Length: 150
Image (tube, rainbow, N blue to C red; front, top):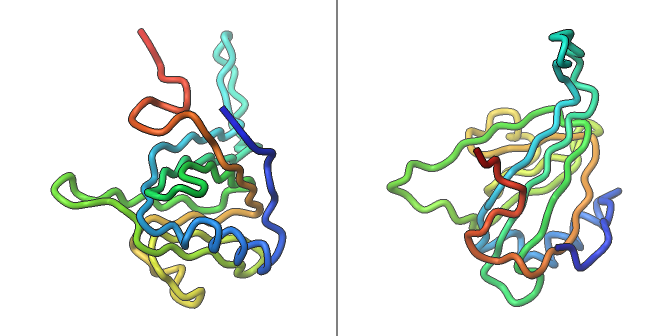
């Protein structure tokens, strides 16, 4: 359930406000992701093979009283580099990066300089646009996105 409207990140000021509001993602984790490409196959097996949507939604949960859960929605996705940690190691985020570079918005799960973004080996998202919203009432392990049931 949402308790807020979507807010669009348009400039460096918006980035700083978001990073401040979520403590640079300190003591947070990526809980879930949901991707829509825009491509599909019809019942007659004809295919629409074009990634027209490229939307990625990422749910974060944080150990914080203010905005403990939020959703980032990336549109016009260029890169998703998902590097989950080994199950033997912790996956909490201690400091994240968010910046504009070459007309795109970049998010990295660590403190990364824009000049090092292309060579970063952790989780990285690059997209044309970003919006976000705080969420409430769904902390814990219960899925946010509808699970597939058989």
